[in-house]
Amino acid sequence: MRKYVFCLILSLGIALISCQESSITKIDADLIKQRCTACHSTNRIYKTRRTAEEWNAIIERMIRDGARLEPGDKEEIISFLTR
Image (cartoon, rainbow, N blue to C red; front, side, top):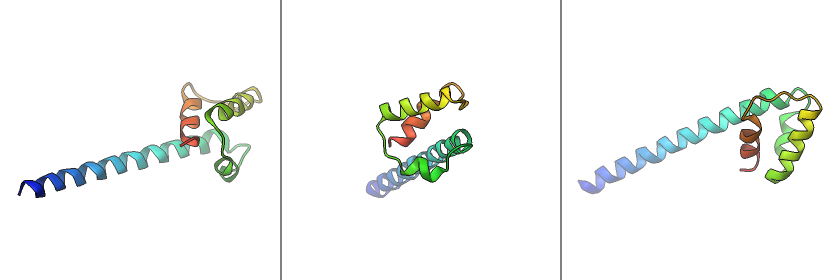
């Protein structure tokens, strides 16, 4: 009986973590869509593999060119794109 309860709790915990990760990914993808697709397709953004430092430089250049980001957006976008 203890094994059954343990497995049930473990399964529920894993399912909860998976749901949270999925929600975070959707939020980050939506943020990129809102902030970056005025000039770029999401395909162009997602197929480009860069380091966090490279994305930072690119986003800083985009901000200089007129991209509008809210405080914290840049860090969220970089974190998502470098996963």
